[in-house]
Image 1 (cartoon, one colour):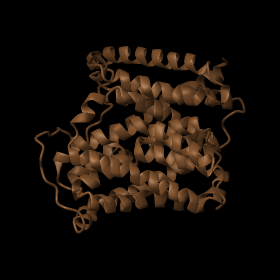
Image 2 (tube, helix red, strand yellow; image 1 turned 180 degrees about the vertical axis):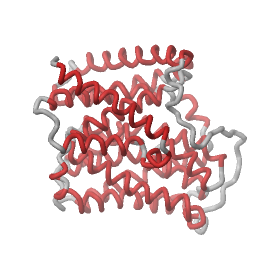
Image 3 (cartoon, helix red, strand yellow; image 1 turned 135 degrees about the horizontal axis):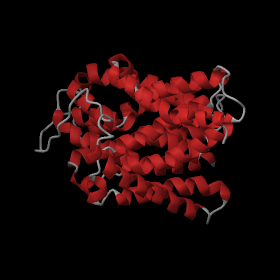
Image 4 (cartoon, rainbow, N blue to C red; image 1 turned 60 degrees about the horizontal axis):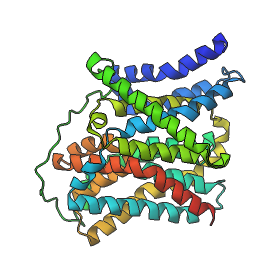
Length: 382
């Protein structure tokens, strides 16, 4: 590699560190979110003409390895055995939430198909992945479905805009509004979790007592990646990425059931750091000039997916007698991912739903890749 190539790789690897430092130091930057800042930096770098022509090779390599390495780290902190401990209503609410997302996204696919968006089935798969899981699932499905970088960036940008409005609604008038239709929350559990608002989950990751155990997690991650890569050689080339991602997801879930792996601190944060690298790289591959022809229908589709699934979830929640607080926290976990659960729980003044909400979100991370890919392939044939 030339010195210029090495410098570009170092830029991609360490710019998330700078972004996280800014988020830690400046509250207004933190409110924007590290992923948003990563996309912004990537878009600027990729569209001001400073990247050389050979940058594409480095970008392809980094996008190919960051997501597969991130998935195990993101899933190690989950625990399949603990999913059985979810309260009955929370499990019902989870099933209702997933059914609502899948139903509305599929309906939206047929509403918006032929409205100027190519390969809409790929967008549908990504939406199911991100609204049952989160950003890691969106990134995984981008690879599995070979989504154009411009479409991916714009999809996630609109997702962040619409999700912000969605969160504002839930945190302000959501509980009062849904309480008109849904029963009140009944406390039938004794389990609480402590959560400190404003804490930085990345802080302390390089402390000896945290970093040394993390090295074991990194080693296991590489091993899982290697196994998945070996298995992918047994299938046709056009199916190899799918086999890699699904194998990694499955092996990571199995690994998370072992206490020595599940209890390693900061694995999730390590995975998210890799997702930030991916975000900067893929954003720098996007061409802003191509966004204009993609916007109207895509924005409408994502809006329908977010608020349409919420509406259907409330309707089904009414039928199955799911309370307002559980409905709100389930929708938060699925649409916005687990980190937002404690924030919304504080806004609706109910800490009792935090544990079930986070568990729902983690389950969403685990199933998002499978569900998004399966639905996308079904829609492709229609």
